[in-house]
Length: 212
Image 1 (cartoon, helix red, strand yellow):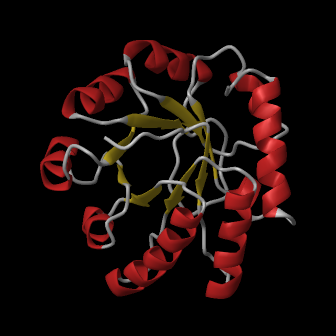
Image 2: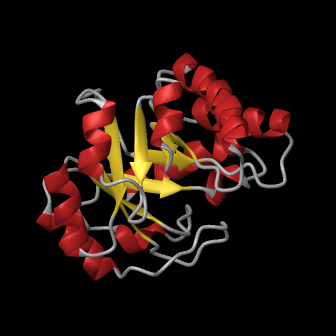
C-alpha cells in the first residue's frame, strides 16, 4: 500500500465554479499543505468526472499528495489514482480491493462501531467518520457524536478521520480524541484564500494536538 498521511484531508467541491477557478483553488490548497486530496463529484457524467479527475491528479502529483476518488472505482482505476473512498452504498470494500490491488489506498465511511469494524476487516486503510457538524455540501449527512467517534477510534487499528462541517474555529471539540486527522471541504474550498485557510487550519489542529 502507498504511504499516506490523513492529517489534513481536503475534499474538493466544484459546485458553481468554472474549471479554471476550481483548479486554481485546489492547487492553492495543495500549496497550503493538505496531506491527502479527494475529488468528489456527485453530479458529473463519467466522462466529465474523468476529465476533471485527470487534471486534479496532475496537480496532486506535482505536490506529492495522493489523490483519492470519491465513490467511483472505475474512475480511480482509469486514471491510476492512488486511492478510492467508498460509502456504505458503494461497492463493498473487499470487492474493490480485489479489483484495485493491495498497493492502493481504500477509504471507507463509517458512522457506527460495527460499520467501522466491518470496513477494517474487509480491507479499508482509513475511515472517515461524521458528520460532526451539519454541512453545507450537497452530500446527505447524519450527525455523529464525538463519543461515537472516540469509540470508533478505539475499535479499529487504522487511521480514523473526523468529517463534517469542521473549520478552524470549531475543531476544538475533537481535542483528546485519538483521530488521525480531519477532513474538510468548505473550510478551504470556500475560503477567500484557500492556501492560507489550509495553513491556518493545519496550524490550529497541531496546536490542539489533533494532528502531529
